[in-house]
Length: 124
Image 1 (cartoon, rainbow, N blue to C red):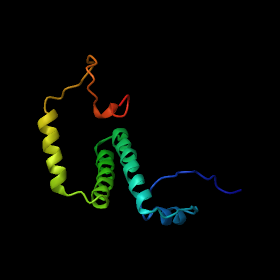
Image 2: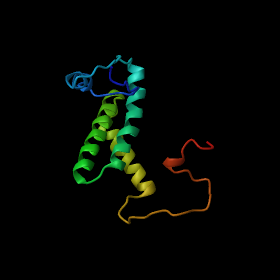
Image 3: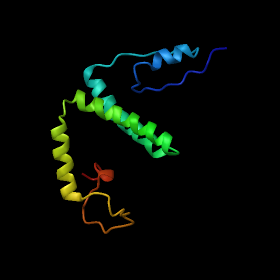
Image 4: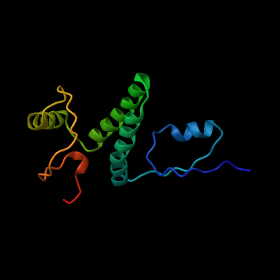
């Protein structure tokens, strides 16, 4: 009786197939086109960010943040984004929205049409 197959359908790091085989398993991989790779990288950010939100303890949080930064660094390279472009954007957003020093937690607000990042795409 063979092992159960799990369908992942996601971008993985280069050494993952070898690790699966070394653990006695088998897998199927395909190589993505440049366009497919870009799309999957952007999707991978969500997966890695989810890992950050689910981390338990500082050690796991550090590991998950490292994974997230690896994906972000790859996106920066693939999309040819300069550190200057990122810094300009960060400064612009900081000036517009501020930072997190006050530790503010928005409980509710009247609907003024303002859309936060969490709501982008809804009704737009």
